[in-house]
Image 1 (cartoon, rainbow, N blue to C red):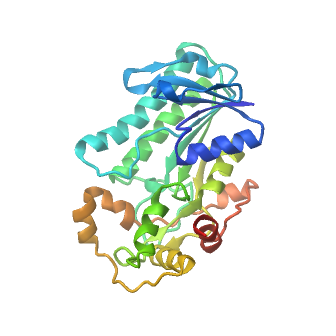
Image 2: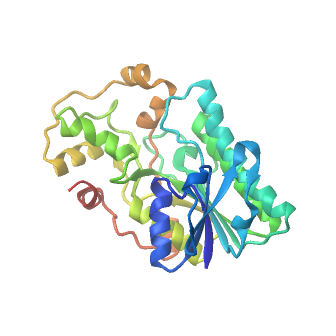
Amino acid sequence: MRVLITGATGLIGGEIVKLCHKKKIKVNYLTTSKSKIEVDENYKGFYWNPEKNEIDKSCFNDVDAIIHLAGATVSKRWTPEYKKEILDSRIETTRLLFNSLKENSLTINHFISASAIGIYPDSLTNYYDESFKTNETSFLSKVVNVWEHEADAFKALKIKVSKVRIGLVLSKNGGALQEMVKPIRMGLGASFGSGNQWQSWIHVYDLANLFVYVLNNELEGVFNGVAPNPVTNKELTKTIASVLRKPLFLPNIPKFFMKLVLGEMHVLLFESQRVSSLKIENKGFDFKYHHLQPALHNLLI
């Protein structure tokens, strides 16, 4: 099998590439940097520039499936210009792949797109599964709705479509966890707001395995990329402190303060989504890290 991956050098993409190589799946990847192009038979790089609608069409040669992860990070201050970039980056990259396949009558079997649990409304009580119909109007849910709509276009080309709604990804190589760890290591850790907001997390190892499981088993539809046991922000903060053997004695950080510091992006820390992983488990997927403590032990010790 050969798979084309966008966002292959990112946090999740890097893990998926490692796993593909372990499972003898060959990888083509797209990059906006010509200096990052490799020509190894098992890991071939191809240039694209979605803003200018440019792509090296040979990236599709012998490809069975596409894993699409590319998109501007949401973990950056949301100015009006940057919000446009978050949205445009997802639309432009997905459309460029779609139009390239359509215009050149190229065939692949499966399109697997990253998505996000930000599609679900902020709630302390709901327990969301993939069947939940959202009419949420927040910026993040708008982004995810547009992203998934663009992915669904591939069905018109008789291609199987899957969407993985990713939660809070825990990794030792960057991402949210490393930002949370910094103040706790210095003895300055604290929960955000009430601390009661739900955080649906996943270890990056399990997330990479989930993508490859969807690929290998040709699963179609929407799947939540979260571990089976979500935790509150308070529990997450306490468990990180306990694994690092650091005290937690500061009061919770008020919402208004983080809004001053981060602007509109502060919702990433305060919104609550308790999300179910049952659908992918019922398809036979096994999580290595079901519970938070072992996941943090693996990543922080």
